Length: 232
Image 1: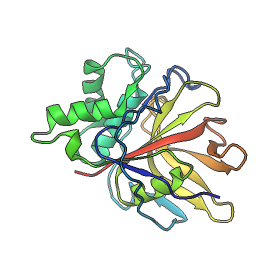
Image 2: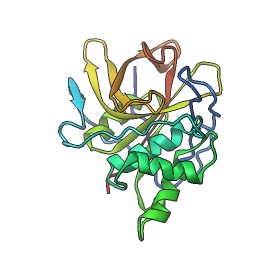
Image 3: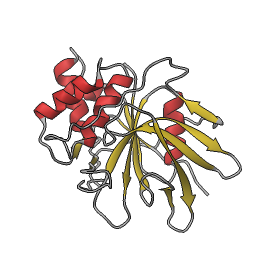
């Protein structure tokens, strides 16, 4: 039903999206703008019944939240801040998000741009071209997520609503696997909830629509894109 398909990309991760409110509006869709994608690559992992990567890593999860002042469309920047902190490139997600809020306009943007700006300006001798950034956009997104979280990487996911050019980024920290159903619960943080907390929703594969669809919170949204950032 689902076949492995991911992309190894080191430079150009140009995925635009944001959520201007709790219902998921406001993000521009730029999913097709991914130049220079390399050959497919995927590190297979066996599914665990339940895996929360902040527990074996003994590391607090990162969860930057919007302030609702000049950052309504900056979920992409909040997710980038979370990835940088979790992967060990930055010390605090809120401080890192503040850097992005000061530098970028409050509009749909690109995770790659945020990562590139931070590494170029706050990591001596490091550029985004030197950091392994992997991305996947096939119907095997869950296999990519399983692989990345087991490797302890920073992981972000874009979700979108059917028929709408909107999107929202969430930061992923683990999963629960239902072997009998071949479906998952994902553990994530959300820049829209205003709280430092771990959340979860169930995602199920739909053979008719050929995509992973969310079943409760963000119901009717589906997964379109996943990216990971290597640890420092």
